[in-house]
Length: 246
Image (cartoon, rainbow, N blue to C red; front, side, top):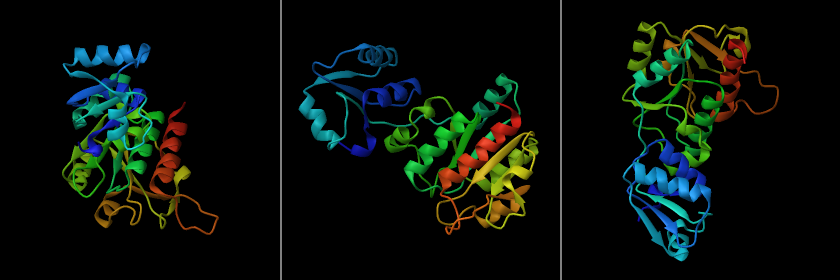
């Protein structure tokens, strides 16, 4: 059994079911009980996902010491959204589109944290490339603390082409760069927009930087030259939220 396909723990499994992720089966330890166990069983039956009662020591073995709380989902495959789903959500809320584009984020923890922040800040969706970047795995699911169940995450082949399409739809593109001319809080975020956050080591790729309508910088007074991707994303996303009104 591939541990990278396992979701462990009662709440993470519940969130995976709410997100209608593809799961081969759900293992529940004999003797595990409680409201959330009954809810997991109900969601699983409703989605046609097999339930299997097993000895707790079996889940202990496959979880490699992780605190599984007597529940494991096997064969995880995330159900990615379509780009249209993101625009539909913005329209349904009566808001200008607010997207987060992630350029070659490699660390699953950063990806999960950025998805969590995007959901909390009111973004309508997150878009990742389908190559040379972290994809949604159980580790990302855990790092998002369940937020991934509530914000659409889409994949595209090429962010460069996507930005061209977004501009045709009237979106403005904002990126972060240490050499940016304006500070991140000096620009206006009330218009339809997409925020790009670059990879942990290299930042936003050159071709995407050149397509940005605004390149903004985050002031740094310490000795380190930059924030990590998830921290930089949190700063910028919450400035969008602040300007648009809580």
